[in-house]
Length: 112
Image (cartoon, rainbow, N blue to C red; front, side):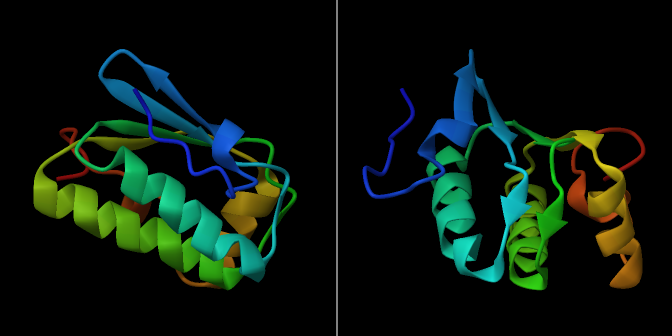
């Protein structure tokens, strides 16, 4: 069972699918939501996670930093993290920061 933080307005974005978790990022992720995203990711730690960024229309750098930090934790734990979808805005923001989606993926043959 996923532990939902009652005060987290993004709690509904994290769902459980068997042993895995799915984090469906909302359309708008301003910097002040970074803590909420971090809380959700920490509650999913030790489980494979699928990030769905297909609905993202705005994402500020602090939220991207949280996602990168999570990928680092999942990599250290040896647990899979994948990016199942991304909007053009999400991809453009990564590119602007000099990043690629590979930096958010962990655990398959292409992303050790």
